[in-house]
Image (cartoon, rainbow, N blue to C red; front, side):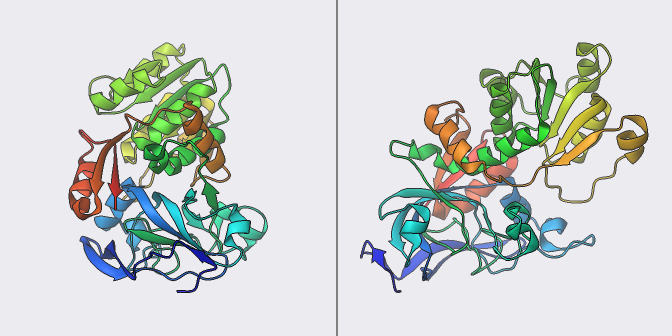
Length: 367
């Protein structure tokens, strides 16, 4: 390896989880990646397990290809995009470019934009046509289920400030995504806002929406433990669709009209039809979920019946600094969201906990 700066004690091999195919994740010893000019090598401090990692493991058609979608995963690849780490080596110019020095703690946005496509050149980097995301394309962007990571030359890296609570750093990525979703919802002071799906992302959306001070903030989920925590973290009301008619409840609370904003983060197709039934005419529907299979809805509701403003929300453009600040200042709480921390060798247990979601909310692997 050739570095301009390094700590000088970097080994040649590391432990990493490698994704070979659906259902085939293996803990192996592989080479520590080399870095070039403008690149950074970090020693991973922790990496969260995302619902997308679980869906990748189970071979979701949208991720592996199918239903008219191109294959997104390019194995073999090291999974993981919710990571943080300590800088142990800097390629030429990287320190100046990112304001980083050795031993700093840093995060990197989950997308590694190409910097050359139409979207990147227009500043819309989160829609990069190449669209490499850590943990899905080997060599272009190996992920954080490993002891070390290379942050490529076009990566978007952010230094964590002095005094940042490092155990919370694995929540920067989910929170940044949640902030973007709430920004897309354009929450107003008189709005009734519903967030469906109170997982790690939903908790970030909930707390961010709370900072917008809407008239009424409602959390919907099927897990009572998560609803109880949602009350603690800012929800005015919580509802369980397995126990009550949530559409009727929201309609009753709004004089029969429905909610002004509906953010779908459950990843379940029923959340879509629930939202289309619950939202008022001219309402704002924000779709964040990733689905295993195509979901069918009555599109006439969107146009002919309600003339809804339907907005997608993808990744976290320009929201990492805000997420870091919210966690640093305690405006968003994450201690009770990061429920399980496991060593890398127990990644299979971690994936199972994350998938079941009964006791675990966010599982973090610590290499």
